[in-house]
Length: 605
Image (cartoon, rainbow, N blue to C red; front, side, top):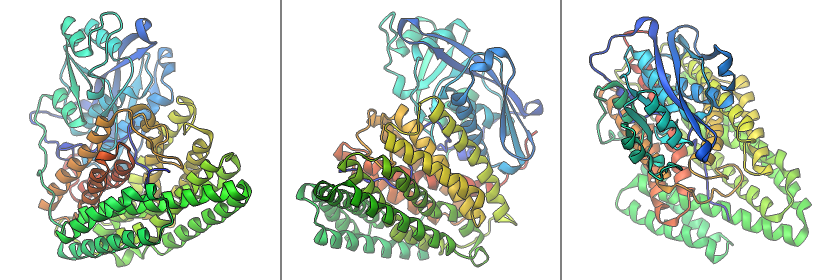
């Protein structure tokens, strides 16, 4: 049956929160006039021997304004800059603003394109450019880049790299940054890999794994990373961690005793239980919680799927469709009730309010996907499809009933320290909602117009499309700034997941109503998890030095990594998808806290 997945594990075309980028302190750079610079972005068209490439010198301008970004297609040659370019520029604007420490409601970003370009492969270069413009830095001459960008800071695979290297050489560039995942791509004419091809053309081709490496190459200055170990949890949160870890281990144990799942489906959860029990004994609460959570959610999912397939085969699809429709409605109702009870903001610390959207993501994602599962049921034509949707609904109900309360228990213990906090945290969050919503819309357009749909099969496409519509409505109609921000994050991550999972990790069924599957590029997925973990570690370390309570992102990151590591030997992506969901929410929260507690002295020019 299907691997477990939690919230969308956004994967590539979107934002990035890279190690050190949260604290980029590059020496010797004054702000360019009017916060404007030119970013050389590589493009390619065609394939094989017929592939051609070029360099588009996109202009980036950052100024004071009412937030958001825009794209000016300033020449008829730029008419090809469609949804993919919009997604790349939206991601760049989102990421760079997040990591810059500038309040997004006060920054306006404008891209001007005059030549032929499209595709998401400009995302990483544009992010470097926007960040440099915000910070008043300059870019080194002779450097160009191709690659997508993800919320964990990974630079993702793209197409047409040999043609892009040739174009860079022809245009006089001496350094081309390419994704690590493309380092082995071979030029169809010479058979050389892209690094050797560059050398033959007098160009250094340097594979980069994340945006931190790209920033260093483009600026020539050092990137000051944060500490290499996360700060400790506060005593109050540590107590919550211990109790929730013990409860999760007990929950998995009880579920295994009562489960009617077949022995084959119980094998992995049983192994998770043994590992989690040992970790609990050792006092490694994050390992115990993450490992047990991975096993429990897997068991919840496969048990529901297996029993539904059996019932559908025995009694037909229609009775099971009706039952699942009822269950979907129940999940939506439970999520709505929990959102309504999510707490009076006046009774929570400011730092708690700023962390709350990440915790509420369990509810906004569960609500949206449950509603979308209901809309997809009429399209189901096989018992296996029903079984998969049944597993999804069971997992969503687990998110509402268990994962959300566990997350809220941590948030409730957060306390304000000496660091300055926004006077109006709701308004501050609304600025982030606006920014992230724009990136979500751009990704959705890319997925539909470029990839053809939001999913690899009709049922997945319907689930994804319906979920994004539900989240869009919640962004508009959410009862509080915290709920609106949580909905925007879930929406952004779902659309990123559907775009990037397919084109960067080879996971066509990445996280919405279907088995996650086995990634085509396991190294890239592993790197995504490690990048995200390092990002959170560096960011929270710097925040702790300012007196900010970082317990929520530290805890979420730690147990997420444990879930990923529990799945390393399985060959499937379920645990890593689970981990990425937590890690990306934690990374965004850390960036948000960075901006909230230490706004830059200089606003954009």
